[in-house]
Image (cartoon, rainbow, N blue to C red):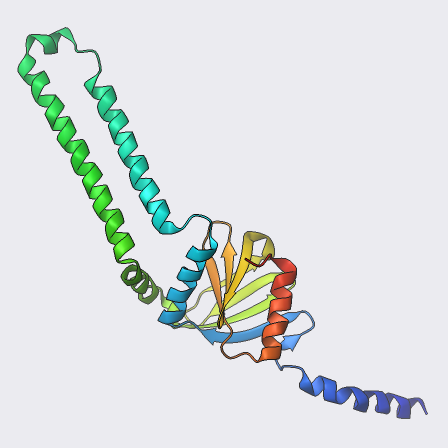
Length: 212
């Protein structure tokens, strides 16, 4: 009689077991994916929209800070006390002022040019970063659990991160971005997942991190 009851329970639960995704367990989810160049660019754009200090504004702020420091240095040097030896040879003192000013101007202009180049050619720079990173051309296999994220790549890299190192998560189309506290990120490509699998993944991530 007990054997018959056990058989009935197993048969009753069989449809539910069959409907579960093959890589989803009670502890988390494991799946594989690749990241295209378009995915990489989209991830960076998503990060810039979600962070409070966009990188272009940050670059401009760096340029302003560098030039303020240069102005302070020029003011301090140009207003320093002049030794008696330099007063006796005014030609050397007269030539040092314009030379210092020229050097500071050149440094400021070079810094500005580099920042403007990075801002204007942002997409080109990101594409070079993508193709120079061997991991981006490999296939990722991630295991998402309640404890964190374990990632392996066919390029030979692997990592294990607890949720505490991440600050928030974001989603756009087929991508989930897990952003760390230093504003680097991990990309999860959901393109191959079903609607139910995506919901399972969102539930795991949302239980660990705030959505932004």
